[in-house]
Image (cartoon, rainbow, N blue to C red; front, top):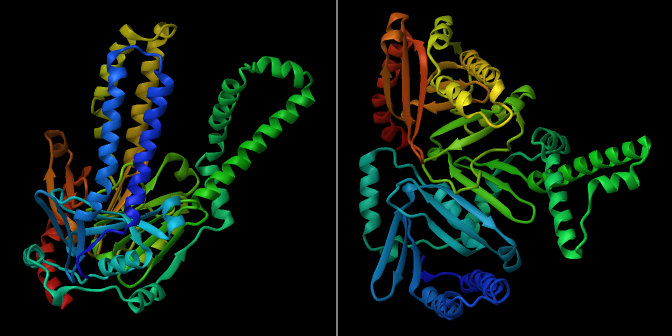
Length: 511
């Protein structure tokens, strides 16, 4: 692809963002504090107006001086002004692709795209406005990138990426290539109405109707100047038991219907698909979010269960990669209300190498005894605090509160030992841990960056040890399992040392 500027609608997108800031400024300066005589507000608004004028002028200038170029091995972003800023990212560093279509993009037939990179030094490449066909082509190019298995090959690719892109290395979008990729995708999961109903109850989304109703009621009172007293409402419309019952039933139905509508909007268009090289997830009703990752970039697979989900035999699956995760976004999670059997089947279909084993080893009984005898510093510190600083009305119950806290600590430790399991299944290390909330991690041997064994004096007496494994992710994930049998940790070390032979075979196998 020849060096080119961003989509012209990028300027309209930035203009919209600036106009929203201007509206907020006008409301603050000319409505909220319009009668203030403070010099900071009197003269400050003129400086802010100048600031917004500069922002508006800078939009077409930034569009004109910013360009990007895609080659067969890297993407380069340039900004030419008084100086020149250049960022070149090899495709091998791109961990996953995050796309989002807001209402602006739907109206204009475009999309936004973020390329999340593994290195902390490299910035995420963000296309705020991109044509759909260009986004599909670039996503397919990244997901179907040939693997660079060893570090030396990565270093060569990074050096090559820093060089100028020659015309022979430029690549252009091809409609046939995009169609071929889309046709090869297989859809593994779309939620049925049964899934939506189950998600409504297990997520407690029907309770969200209560604060929404309270917010609407507050806005009504502010708009009309009338104050609604709940007791007066009951005296007028709930003076008999059958009226109260009807109002109660109506409130419950409103919560259930509202929760179902909210869940339907959020999850009805969920789709999980894959092809031979990549995994694709898509969700959103009004605003569409999609996530794609090359199967080679998946560092680990994690199953999560809250206490409620464990009671309902539900789980959620997260694909761990070395790319960053945008705050508030959960794009790398599969549908979060799958049954355990559905989740295991889906992982097996998406990533055949990650086989879930149902035959795992539990921690020995001496691990429970050791944990129960270990003092809880949370309880030790909290007890005197409850005695001296208990809230008003609870000071005489400090002993009961301390006892409840101790019971929770003991229960958490018992559940942690009960649900902690581990095993080695071929080249997969599978470990499960947690008390009230559990996590089950599957990681391939060649994805474990390092391992560490340790044992304190008490663990040595009873033949136990702790094991820590480090997985390449953002942030780096360290999985520590305490109180494993010492002989098993020695076996794990021997198994992990075979990783070197496995990595050495990768270049030949990939060839």
